[in-house]
Image (cartoon, rainbow, N blue to C red; front, side, top):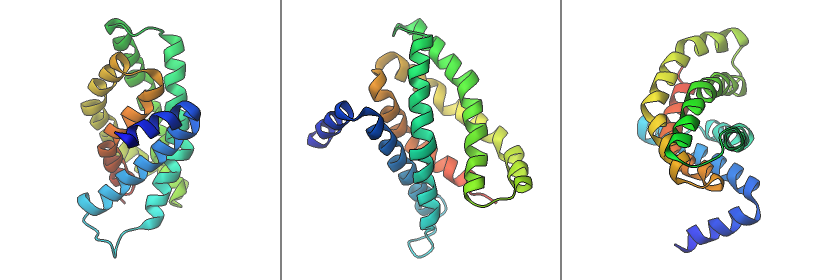
Length: 176
């Protein structure tokens, strides 16, 4: 409880910094889970650079983009009724999620040094599966998030759920 209260105080004092650092930390955690539990690399084979890439993606891309999107979405569709939450979820999943994944996957490829041609081929191969998998998890999460969670906590809630999603994305983004 004390940790949660400290997080709330930090979030109130420095909302943008805390949201970005939260996203980066949880993206890194997702990669660690991917490497250690999904891929079973072990500590000797753990790719620290890959984890740092995912932390960088969280701080430099996911946190700012998703945090900014939630602010825009709240301006486009103000309110917290069930109908408002449904509209937000439909816009989020119908417009934002496909664009976000279409940027995330090749950006990881660029950070990993992939050529443009290899990155394009990987995007064509992985994007449809990643988007379909997205639709298994995120519509229900986002519906609850938009209906029940205040704006300044949405990114943190999503990133907590996203530890599992980040593990999947890290695995998917780093498959060759």
